[in-house]
Image (cartoon, rainbow over all chains, first blue to last red; front, side, top):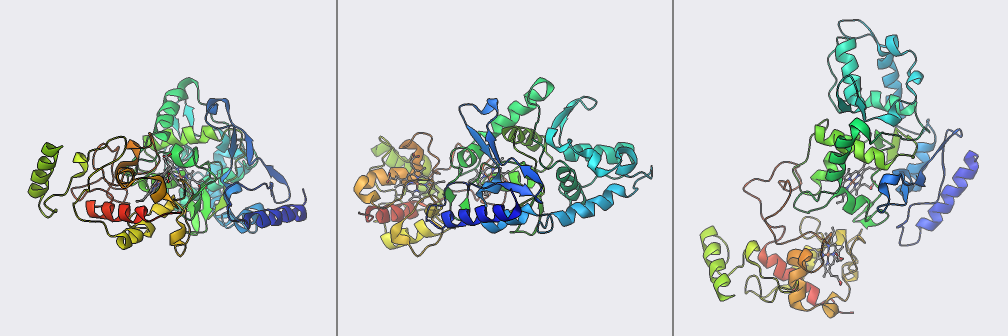
Length: 284
Length: 157
């Protein structure tokens, strides 16, 4: 679809959204830079049978302008941070005086990495998030200080690594050595935390498409992370979002980077298997 | 029944500050999801109840329910049914039960329990993300529940 045609369909969506119940996700197509077609809805992975038939990106639940911002890298504020990370990628750091590029080559060489994380890393004997893997490179290969889990260098780097995989389907493994971690994450997803006794599933599986106060509930997918939020005008990591959602149930939340959130991340990522990587996406 | 009211009184007195005949959250008696007797013995104030239903920091009921009578409050949610006509559909006792602990009326309901203090998983200190401390209490006080119930009773089609 040409950009003009996309804009027209977006206007169509605006007209629809003008009716009082803007409950449903829009019927629109996301093509990045008139080039990369993004799968924003697809058949749910088998492990969701009985729960969801179709999985949908959070992009479909956002307003016309927010959606348009993501369609073009010049309009996507998240891309500024991708550029910053490109500098980090090429900068030597730590006792070894090496950069990421020294071992991995061009950042585009990392295409295909984001879609399979979190994943079980044989050498480490554990399921690792992309952040953990980045810090492992920093510490063991570069002799550099680890970055703060949701600090700006880390989040910028995850935005770069997502950006070079945009359009590829999320495809995390849930079986084999990853299975027990996945099960743990699944249990968390259905646990009704906090004084409000709400689980992720209550909001994002049972109620997506509905309004909860001023918010249009999406399926809570993480294929677009890190996301640039207009609300706080910065990139936000998936674990920060999890932290906020659990806090909003009036619960004692978990820490970004905790084993609990890594397990939850694996499970939530697996619910989006088949959706395209979109990060850095734009959300409100 | 009599015994539990006496026990409630004793507990309320020992906790101090509570009205002498206030029923504590753990002593509320549900019958088929309904609660027959007032939690305080003091008649609810519908005008106060109306404020609680629409107030984000109090009941925040409109996060999930549309209430046409509160049309001036923007952004009403649609997770639960509209509360218009709730006073026709339910008795006062039913409404007291639903607001105190909706899960007694609707099995597994997504609606939070507004007068309950036990049985939570990782309860927090309000919306701070930190663990609950000794300031932990029910989402609404007994009299606030009575005020909300008094308001809901007035919602007739």
